[in-house]
Every structure is written in C-alpha cells, then in structure tokens.
Amino acid sequence: MSGAEELNKALFGVDEVWLAKHDEPILEPELPIIDPHHHFWDRGGPYLFNELLKDTRTGHNIRATVYMQCRSMYRADGPQDLACVGETEFVNGIAAMSASGDYGPIRICEGIVGHADLLSGGRTRAILEAQVKAGNGRFRGIRNSSVWHEDQNIRGTPIAPPKGLLLDAKFREGFAELAPLGLTFDGWMWWTQIGEFASLADAFPGTGMILDHFGGVLGIGTHTGKRDQDFPAWQTSIRDLAKRPNVSVKLGGLAMRTTGFGYRELPMPMDSVELARLWKPYFDTCIEAFGVERCMFESNFPVDKVCVSYATLWNAFKRLAGGMTSDEKSALFFDTAAIVYKLKTAATG
Image (cartoon, rainbow, N blue to C red; front, side, top):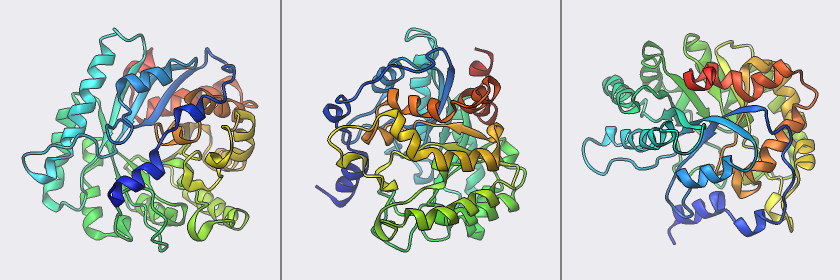
C-alpha cells in the first residue's frame, strides 16, 4: 500500500458495521435541508450516486446538494491544466440523473464546486470558462485546498499544498478571475491559517468566499490535548474573519478524525446529544460572529462518515439549532446555501 493509499484509509476509511451499532429517530423530519458540501469518489471505498442516495434517504428532508471538489475523475488525456474539468463533467452527469426525477424530488449536485489551479497565470480564465461550460449551468465556484501546517504529520489531504498559498501574488492574480465570472471560492485550511483567508477576503471584497469546516479545527499532532488552549485563539480568528461581509462559514467537518475528538476509539458511535454537546462552543461562536444568514450546515460526507452516520449527523445539527426560530433554522439548513450557491431549483422547490 502506497503512502497516499495509507493516508486515504486513515482519513476516509468508513466502517459500516461500526456505524450500524447506533441508530436513533429522525428529529424534525419535515425541515427542508440543502446539503452544501459532499464529495463523490471511487477510491478505497466508493462513494458515488447510489451511496449518497442511500444516506439522504435515511429520514431527513434533503432537497438539494452541492458537490465539493475532491480530485475525482480528472481527465487522463489532453492539457494537464484542464484535467480538472473531468471532475465537473463526471458530476454534471450525476446531476442530470438526479434532475430526471427518476430518483425522487431531491436535486443532487444542483450546484457544483470544482477546481482550477489559480497559479496558472494567464491560463486561469480559460480553465474557469471550461469549467463553467462543463457544468451546464450548475458550476458555482472553485475550491483550492490550502491546508498546511508546520507539523508535517498533520495532513488533511493526500496532496500537500505549499505554505502561504492564499498569500501568493500569482495565486491572487488567478483569484481575480473569479468575480467577473460570478464564481465563489471555498477555502479548506486549518484554523491556524484563517488570517490568510481574511487577508484574501480583504483583497477581493467582491468575491463570495466560504470558509469550510468551522475553519479547520485541530486536535492531532502538536495540537493533541491542547483544545482548551487552542479554542480562544480559534474564536478570535473567527470573530475577526466575520468582519468581512463577503465571507460565509460552513458548520460541519467536526466529525473528521483530524479534530482529535477520538470518535473512532469508542466501542460504538456517539449519539446526536453527545455530538451536539461537543460541537456547541464552535456553533455558538460562529452564529454570534456571522449570524445565521452567513452560516450553513454541511455534511462533509463521506469524510465525516468515518465517525458518524448521515442520520445522526443531521440530528446533531438540529439539536444545535434547537433554540432557534423557524426563520433562523430555515437560514441554517436551507436559505444561506441556496443564496450563496444560487440554487434555483432548491430556492423555488
């Protein structure tokens, strides 16, 4: 097994038998939900259309989804910088299947977030335009992973981005091409890099930007056992970032192993009550800083499936939002995602 394969297994390996040890009734089953962050891949354990359908049919009212890039199905032939367009072509095919209505009212991949190497200089515009064309009206933006840590044992993806990617002048030259095409930017980083994301937001106030996974909470490597020490610094970074009106935040990703909560070391999965208790300080901070109109829950599946089932995950989110008004819940579970990603079917469905 190669190093990349071992890392994939450690980060993304799902044990369905372990997950099946816990089940619970669905809370608020009628509440409309957009899942604005999931992946498809066929590496290790496949997670494709049928797998997502199975998860979304576990009882929650999932109306639409947004696909998030993960280097799936890149083109094997043609210009290397256009290989990423293969992912959008692949996902758009799945979206077309869902749009047929043959699989129910859900609109899977109503929005597509792909990839473009923003270090491509003068080629960036052509890559983005090719992505928009391949998306057939569904392409909404790009994501460039910038997860870097001085502790090289802390890895969030098999591909290691360079240090300071978001600060790179050539990267920002490419970034400038997003707004003219009406495209958003999803940022995947560790919380220690949120200041770089804030700097990018300052430089491009007209570009819609989304911070993924609560900003990348850490509890492994040099952050092991330092949650209480790290939390105030994370909180300060989140509050500062929220001053940029062009930034939204996704509330999810806390079931990843990199958070260090130790879910998989337990004999059976945590229930939604315990998950909501663990996640509440992060949720409360983001809601206070950004407001519900700039926050959206995300599944981050199948990455978070390593530690929690789809049904339990959304129950935990509903418990976190238990004290909210109906309008506030609508924003967190549906409206913010529909607005940020311009989901026409979801917004009118």
